Image (cartoon, rainbow, N blue to C red; front, side, top):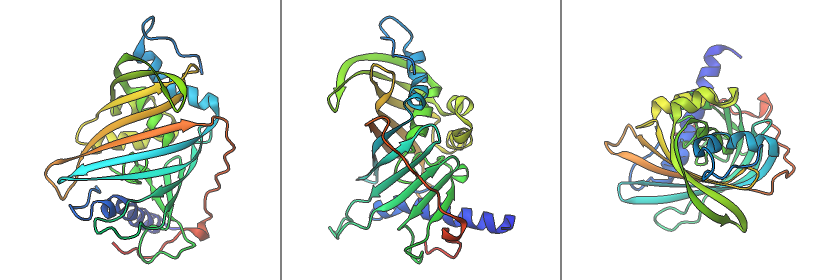
Length: 280
């Protein structure tokens, strides 16, 4: 494949990924440019505890995941939900993303199937004119948000690696998530720092997000179990859409459970990736 054709695919794919957000806010304007045991921070360093949460996930190998992305702009608020599995060692995952009904109450659209991999997002059932059996590939390093927002679901491991850039963190207290005892931490992360500390698979994408968001400071709430694994993490992103003056507020929540669950994510072959024109 020639370099020019590859770039053409990436631009087309990025437009389709951005469409996930466009569809949801069609009534108000498009939002597109998408371990070691925990130490109780009362006796230790909360920032250090939070920064090593991603390593604990690698130690856990895999998990099931649920995602929720809430977006607010122009007086409209919508939520996109996803569910699937993720392999933290291979940094591969599979999510079924559900778009909400449109404002007129029409039947919800078909779920978007997403495959996550280092530097790439593959989507099926997204984009008018794309054959039902074809995937659209997006180079996440080309996205101004590093695919923290565009795909309608934040990559679970990328969500964890944002915490590597934690600048502040405080221990809030003990609570439970889905019946599991957890410790709640709240703070802010710096995307630039996270990009420098992240794995090779996420460093470029996070660096793009650090440049593309309205601010590289990301407030977070994270809930860690006794093994330091993330059970729930919520990020609040802010970015400026080219079609609107005001920043768009996005709250992305990831729930992780059933650690060690089997994960078999097979990426599409070249012949299964659509290279034709995609309707806007």
